[in-house]
Length: 319
Ligand code: SF4
Image (cartoon, rainbow, N blue to C red; front, side):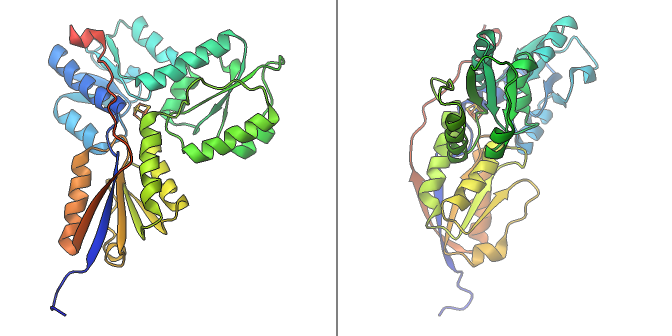
């Protein structure tokens, strides 16, 4: 055998992966707002859950804040992140005469409108999601708390008791959940409330569904799965879980502080790679370069669907 010859590993790259239409739109909104209003522009919360994207926007003149009270110069515009915001945040902006541009993903807005309609029709809304996630805070903040209850798992269903005694139940979900875990929760809910009202179309968005589906196709033949994405990114975390659930022994979230797992890569024959909906493709390219520097790779892109979704920018920015 040739001395110093690198080991060959097979890389299976999942497609679709990475940026979704909602994230694309949110990033474009920040850039267009800077172009229209000059700098600085404020952005409430990480526009999308990715440090690389956030840093790049800071270098272009964005200032990230957690609350509107942190805005020093109220004559500057503020952008609301793709995750959506509670209504009280919009009211606060209006009250303080702050120009705001809403980058909430239209698929999150769809869930907001569902919640409003259900509350208007006096339903007990069971909201499946992850506590403290900004999207969940935003959705719960669309309506009076008396109509909506957050559940995170099947055991929460046993402890659930309706807030309104009228036997009207409906569920909605966060957009970035595990498709399979959520189906199990829904099936349990239907056992308890057979006539529960469902969304006409799943609230879990196309991007979350497609990225999980691509991972499912590859996971079974991989010894290691690397998911490029942030710790705060719900859809990236779900991809890590899906890879394990569908047969991959080890699955690692490649967030900004995660070092390359060199030994694990060298000991693997087949490695799956994907990225969450808020991770730019350059991070995947960099990861592949790093793997190439320590192994020889054979490369296959596994395409399970082709996405053609795009969302319009707010009218204020296209005029
Ligand atoms: S992950 Fe889905 S809901 Fe979230 S921004 Fe992307 S398309 Fe919209």
